[in-house]
Length: 301
Ligand SMILES: [Zn+2]
Image (cartoon, rainbow, N blue to C red; front, top):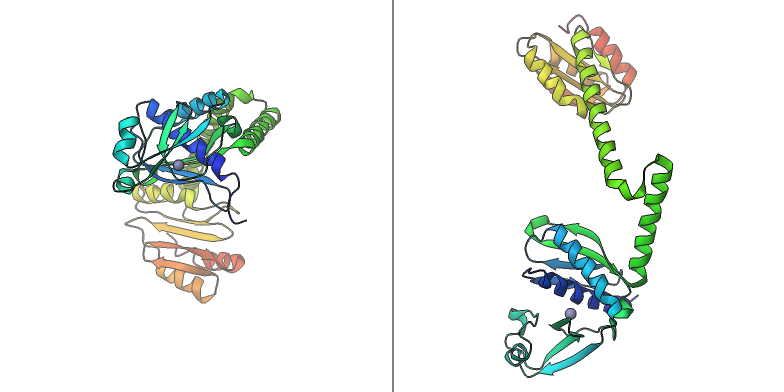
C-alpha cells in the first residue's frame, strides 16, 4: 500500500479537531499532523500540554459538526498577508508560509479555515465519526492518535462490546466501568498490604533460615526485606523462589554471605551479585542451591 486511502478523511477530521480546540480558547500550534501514513494510523502533535478534558470536549464537538454536512472549498491568495486579511482566524504555520506565494486555503463550511496543500473530503458527512484512541503528554507536548470514518465507528463498537462482555462476566454495569475498575484496584491494594503483613510475620518467625516462596516474584518483597534488616540489625533474611535468590544482612549480623555466595557459584546453582551484606541473582539449580543453604545453615545467624 503506497498511501493510506483514508488519509484525506483523517486529515479533514484533524482540521476540524484543531478548530474545535481553538474554539475552546486553546492556542493551537500544530507541530505535526500525520494522517497519510502507509499503516493507516493517524497522529497529531500539538505544542504544550493540553488537558485531556479539553481534548475530549473538542472530540465531542467534532462529532457534533460532522453531520452538519459542511462543504469543503478551496481559495487561493497571493500571500499570507492577503489571506489573513480576508480570514483573521486563519490557522497556518507562520514559519513555513511567511515568504510563500500562492497560499491555498481549505475551508470547511464557515467552521474552519486553514492553509493546507493536502487533499480533503468534499463534505464533512464523509468523515462519519472521529475518535481519539491514544493520548500522551510525554516531553511536555500533546500527542493524540485518532481514527475517523468507519474505522472510528468499528473501534467504538468493539470497545463497547468488550466492556459489555466484561460487565456480564464480572457483574458490573458497563456504564460504571471506572467505578468497577477502581474497586478492583482498591481490592488489589488491600490484598498486597495483607501479603506484606504476612510476609513480615514470616520474616520475624524465620529464625534466620531461608524462606522458599515457590514461583512468586521476589522484587515485590525487596523493600520489606530491606526495612526488616534495618530494624533488626542482628538478623539476616534469605528468600528464594524457583528462579531468584535475595539475601540481605543487618548491620551487626555475622553471617558469611561471601562464603555462601561463592559456594553457590562453585556448585553452579546461582549467578548474580554477591556482597558481604547482600546476595541477589538468578537460581540456576534450585535443588543444589537448597543443599548449599542447608550446608551453611549453621553459618546463617
Ligand atoms: Zn491540512
